[in-house]
Length: 478
Image (spheres, helix red, strand yellow):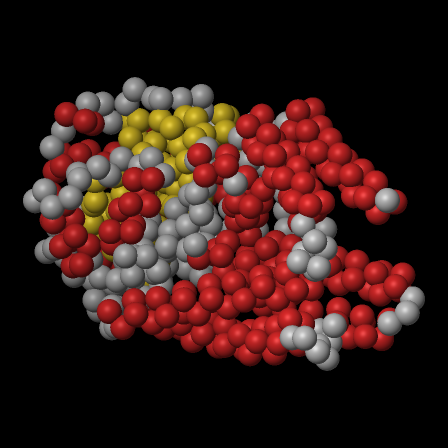
């Protein structure tokens, strides 16, 4: 009876905390113009119906995916999850009294399972396109464009050309450039197929290439007569301009290239002022320095999505002011996009950043996962709160009416590990198949096939062993 009262108290407290954070400490998700740092009222957040239905399962995963320093914060969150789970287990061992040794062995045997489950969650968050929030464009003349994206015909891409097109359509874009590394012929074929009517014309596919010179550059508006192999930075930029294209210096913030003045003197047309391929924000001092430089030298500032088919969900949009877009032919549209990126004016280019939390530095991230969880609940709207309440109450209802032996946490953990095994091995097989189909273009498919396959196999062996011990009639580890 006492345990039942405690569980009900936890349920009520959880619901109250979620409601209080969402109602009284609410953070309104919006799109911010990164150049003015002001919200853009013409653009609204669209929440998928799947998010509403399964918010407790999808929402936190996507919110952690959007973390400012996702690749640092995600592992920290999973480490904390493992630590807290084991800590609670050890308390239960201590309280148990009799049979402590057997119970301790059981709880310690959970550790490899937990690590495998956490690895699977990490892969799920970063590699599987979950139904994230997207954009609704209410503006009269703004066209949403990506200038930096990679398909499986790039050595580091994990998405097909069709998948890239569907992804941009789902996220509300009007047009996008494919900028595969050292290759634009495959992108040209795909673009030509679209313009021949083989599939829908929106979003419009435009051809680019990422050139790895002294710094990575997006070469935009290529028509097949261009070749970059073996050329100097200067020759590449001149050639792109000769054929009517434009050149943007990518992720200059990473410090691997030369001084910004070097690229100005070469004739580059602009810089990525934001790039959300890894961290959501670059060092703000560098950002302000580059912004002032671009303004002083009349160079274009653009937002780089740097999408590879995995990693952060869509967090940045370029909104270009192009009147009568829907009335234009595809070639007219591409020419208008290239011209405004090359020549501006900057007032016609808005860089929109998806904003669901306040900015923070990476100086102290150890406890950040807890703050991220609090911030997640602050962003929920009424329907999302109702979704949480429904699932919490449903879980409590089921728990009270199903035999406790069926819901044994240690057995459930083995079953969850089994699902993770299937997930990792199926994804590994898929990557192997994809890797063989684009061999010579792509490296990461086969690299991830090996990693996922190895982890999946090791986890499979452990799950089978532990499953036998826990589900057999005469368990060795109860």
